Amino acid sequence: RGFGGRIRGIAPWTQAATAAEENGGSLRVRALDWGTPAPERFDVVLVADAIYKPDAHAALLDTLASVFDENADAAAIVAFALHGNAPDADVLGFFDAAAARGLGCAKADECQMDLSASMRGALAVKDSKRALVHAWVLRKGGRAFFS
Image (cartoon, rainbow, N blue to C red; front, top):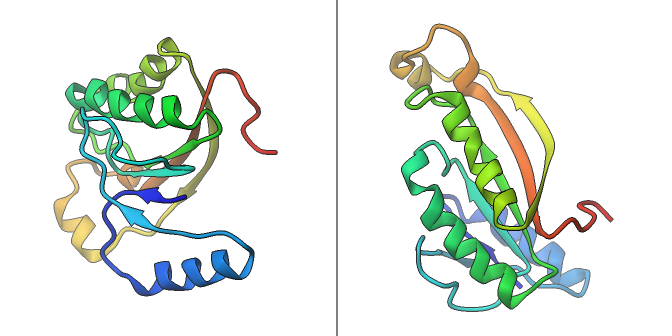
């Protein structure tokens, strides 16, 4: 019934909403405050570049748990890059913590993006690790991810 997250450019989401409506669905964008229960039912939650700070994992997982409690068929798509601000293992520990809470976790894709000029000036690492985008899917229990 909706995506959670903050959206900068509205045009692509308008196109996606139109496509969803043409196929009998709907798309709405809502922000979710980590550590608080989701304010409504969601089918899909998009978590974009939000797990780079390991000390915030528990609050994010608390909110996602409320999504799955409300809708056992929901999915969370977690897209992220490893920023180098914390050890990679600590960032990836998000998925261990999710599994410990009974969520199924599966890597869906990864994509190497080109480094933009702004990224090249800000990168603390000399390789393109920060531009490698990973996508994982979380579902309640061990249910199938892609059906």
